[in-house]
Length: 330
Image (cartoon, rainbow, N blue to C red; front, top):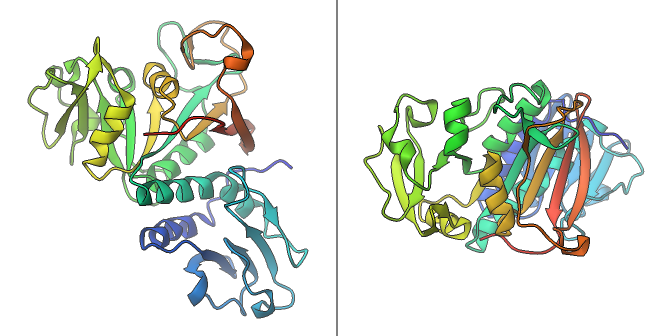
């Protein structure tokens, strides 16, 4: 089934789900009345006037109106969301597309916080031939507007958004939420050498509330504006992803959206510190350029990283949701 991720009508309910999970609730339902979706803890939800119900646990079907649509998702089944429809009337496809992509993110982030871990969702936008930029670094725009809106949803659902210093220099990203409603994440910049601290301070990442700048131990320098410097162990200025995540937990950051670039994403992937890898595949071929990943070579395909995979559509492009089959984030 092709699922299009472009509809924003149910988005406010996913923000409500984040708040519900933050209160310690693990079972909740999404309810649609008219054109509006809402999210409520299972025990307090009145389902009788609902037209559509999406339940995270088996809701009492008897409490539903006879013609209501009902879809149930059991998060214990698998990482890839699988849905059942007890009344044989499924919830509309646009909502299910959002649930496929964003529910594993919300549930993974909440579970990581409970366990004292960090949930890391990484995102890469690439061409059909696996390039994220031209050889000269130019990359705007390989993705499309639907992918940009998706990225801002992800920022709104997680504690922090993380990029490498190279991305800050090349793209000067704002790292905020502008294209959807929702809270801005903590901005995080990795700079092993700390050089970004000694360069121009007018970049977007350093403005306003500033960001957490993570550097190798001994490479600290005064932070620009209201930014904060974190020093972590490193080897030859290569930051240890596990140490980075531990340092960020000390700043109450328990879930991260890792947006790049290639070197940063590859280091976290190599260290098995990614819980969910989202790959946006654009309908173009560059033929040469910067690859999405650069990892240590393997001598046999069985030694490659294995994933469980699902997909949705982004206005003609493909969004792959990939869960590593082995390994655990920090």
